[in-house]
Length: 273
Image (cartoon, rainbow, N blue to C red; front, top):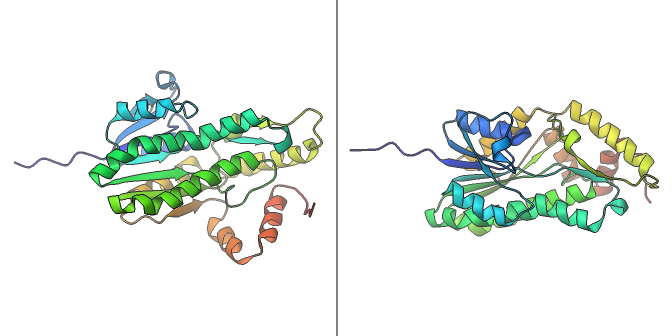
């Protein structure tokens, strides 16, 4: 007597809204068993049918192991949860920088460490680190956020070879500008009388305008899901902001030119200061 294979189990962090919610929805549609995390799973306002919500707070590292224990064996981990941040570097307190790193880096790392032993023992598994194209194209007033996303990309690319002998795949995905309303949830640090305020306001306004024209959460989720389910996934994917063109430019053009163009896209003039 034969039995049908059980569907793969997927754990999607930050599944109560934005990209995470759409990723969870698409995995359900693909027939997978889906768990989605939220800091307050009982208060998810628009739960997705087929998704089981569990508690995870990226800033509380102990919640990572508790989440992994509740879910059980995980075949695919999508580290999507995080917090957007903007502001002047000089105006951002050190304890806030540490908090953003805890949410965007240490939380995903802790959860990956919690599920990785099971993946290694079963000799199969996929971990997707969702970053940001600001890692590859950093701009003024997004330094802390860009640094956190650069950290998770480096973890993914370095860890990929480390765990490959055990059947575990690690993938980095960088979304470009996305129209998910993330700007309304962004943490901002800029002093009332900050010498950086005028240029910060320019970047904030152009960022908001760019986000209104950004790709949809559904389109970005399609990239994440297809990468996670690929037979032979690439180490790195990017989508949005004309990714094929701008990454080609990044490879061919001088770095200062790329930085200048990134600044111009966000309304800032060229500067050699």
